[in-house]
Amino acid sequence: MADGDVITILVKHGNNTLQVSLPAAAKVRDLKEQLQHLTNVLPRGQKLIHKGKLLNCDATLRSANVGSGSKIMLLASQGIHQGPSPATSKPSVTNRKEKSDSLPSAPRHNIQKPSKNVRIQSWKTTGIVSLRDNDLQMVPSEVWSLGSSARVLDLSGNCLTDFSMSISSLTNLKRLCLSNCGLVDGVIHWESLLLLKSLSVLALDHNSLTSIPAEIGELSSLRQLLASHNKLTAVHDNIGNLQGLEKLELSNNCLSSVPSSLGDCLSLIEWLYLIWNL
Image (cartoon, rainbow, N blue to C red; front, side):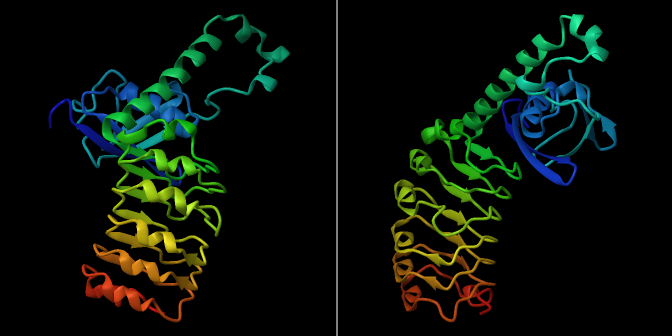
């Protein structure tokens, strides 16, 4: 593995598993800065454990034998977070001594800003945007600024109440994961997906959608459509336009039948019927 290689690390934090992508040459402190934004825990309050050993902030990921797929446990010191909001940041009488120290406020400000920049740079470098399990109701605006550099957008495990039409700006997006996001009809602006000419995987499973509309047939590059565990009662006949469709998951819905036009999907393989389970 070369230092310039980008690796994806799995970080266990409480009940959540976070995916973080960094160059192999990045230091452990860089990883902590990314985790600060995802967990709200300051780097100084993070203990990262890999294979039973505490990682040193000055070590590179490569020298610490952390590679793509490595699993790291994050232990957070209690009470060490990014800091209170401005409205509640006035110190009480008991911490006047801390106020007199010139260090706390300035470093906190300096730590947060690079963390955001590092995250965005990592997205641009890898093309992978992972925001799984962050209790998001809306997608952060900086995601849409990535434009054609984004190839994968994983928003699984959030609580999306509005999915911006700005998704159309990610013109090279190949994989869009919206699993278990609490999606209901009307949240997705299907017409905004029509400019995603490279989209090959669309994951919509474990939501509350009742239909897949006609626009689905315009996603000409789609190879996998995962829509199991919803409340689907209808899938539009236009799905038959997806000549390259190879994988379709519709199990655990309210369908009594599937469109006859599926017979026109030349690449659809036989195990569609094994996972349909009406």
